[in-house]
Image (cartoon, rainbow, N blue to C red; front, side, top):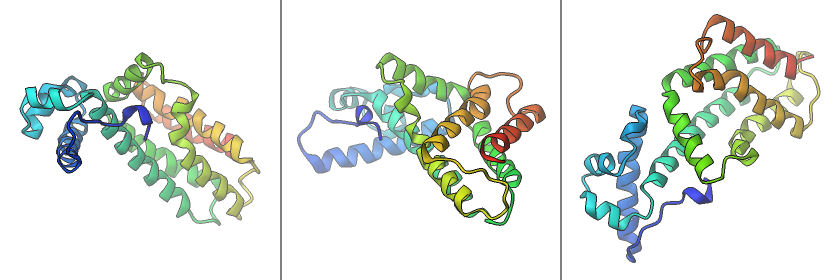
Length: 207
C-alpha cells in the first residue's frame, strides 16, 4: 500500500476508528466494483456506508484516500491471481501457452474495469506528484513469478533473463496489454490486440 493513501481519522478512540474504517472500506469496495468514478465522492460514501455526510467529512481526513486504497487492494488481488496462474503453469509446457493464458486472464480483468477508474487513480497520483516509475512496483510480484517460471521450465522455449530484466519486460506488458483499454482505443480486446500481446510476450520472454 502506498503510504500516501493511508486513511487517517481525526478522532482519538482507535477501536472506533477501526470500526469506521472497516465500514467505509466495505462501502467504498461496492462503489469501486460498480466502476463509476463519478460516485467516488463523500456523498456517495455517506449514502452507502450509512454515516452522516457531516460526520464523515469531519472525522475523515481524506475521502479520496478511501477510494484509492480500495482500488489498490482490488488491483493487488488481480495481481495475485496472475501470480498464481504463473506458479501453477506446467513446467513442461512452452512459453506460447503461458502467453495465451496470461493474455486471456489479463484481458478478462481489463474488460471488467471501467477505464475511467484507472484514469481516476492516475490523475490523482499525478496531481499529488506521485505518478513515477515507482508506481509500477505493484507489478513486481508478476515479474518475480515469471523469472522463477523461466528458470524451472523444461520446454526449452524460455530464454534466460535476469530479475531486473523481468521487471522491465512486465512493465512493457502494461503498455501493450492494458493501455489500449485505459485509453479506450478501439483495438482494445480485439483479435489483433490479443495477437500483438501474445506475440510480444513470446518475443520478450521466449527464445
